Image (cartoon, rainbow, N blue to C red; front, side, top):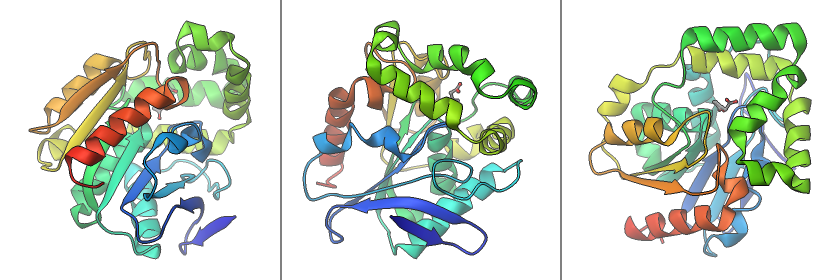
Length: 262
Ligand SMILES: O=C(O)CC1=CCC(=O)O1
């Protein structure tokens, strides 16, 4: 098991593939850990160095008291990449992970060659919406909200599969403090202006049935960055890397090839 002690936080991460390979970094969503990428990675070309991590309050990483800020979540991954001496990576971020990608690109473009904004926005929902969610989690726990969250995460067909139960378990076992901490970070984030100033190769991916960050929101975010590509994965909700891993890996592979990363 790999733990990076970054001073104020210990983050759990995986670093797979040859150390000399082109680097792809993955950042997961609210209420999920680095297993989010398990089904996609085997479909990517061999020879890549694949780094993924549990953001604070999630998975096996430390879970400090809430609230967290987006600046802190960006600093965590910046410190992790410096710790691993990574530069020139392609950064794939899903949902809050996509917000972290935007924040890191604004702050440390030297670390990033290109980014993939998956099922995300420069701004997701409203401050009030997130405050209501935080209050509901404080009052009743994540399980009380899990049915509505899972309806946004997955298209109807996937909700009938045995795998669905495992993702439900991941969500309801998520530490409340980490969930509230990261929800507060999303509530306080509006990257519309900073993201509009970004100039780097960008692929945006949406899920046709995504109830959290619908295709229109992802397309609007992509449109902020000149030259970005926008793709929709059909029969998928908020987590297309889980529901349609081969299609997801195919989009990533085409993008990596187009930008000369492989
Ligand atoms: O739980 C949701 O609604 C989905 C989500 C929003 C931000 C994030 O990271 O996940």
